[in-house]
Length: 119
Image (cartoon, rainbow, N blue to C red; front, side, top):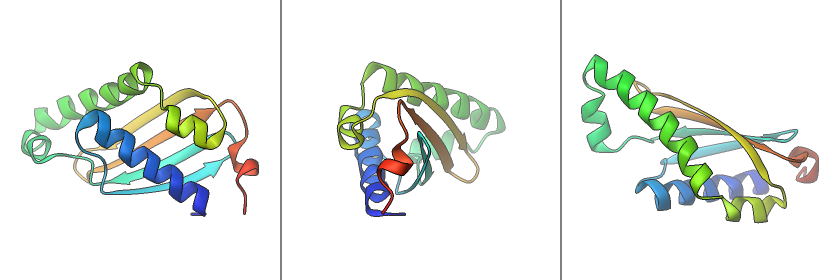
């Protein structure tokens, strides 16, 4: 992870903390063409972990979390991320493995950020 990917990871963590009350404990970002691929650990709050202890809770929590995160980015443009990359976010793909408390987000930007931020 280069310094730009590390800084993007920090921006993702603080954005999630600001808009969800808790951010992931660990974020690793990789830039690939016009994608910023973020692997995130430690996403769930204690209440979410409790809900996930039941099988139906896991499914409900996964569906709610993935949709909630996508909606959060639609309603609150991630201006800090866009300003940092000098690129516009055009799409977002989100998933989470509730049992492992491991999430992935793929941010799709309107230009090649990999070549822009190669060290």
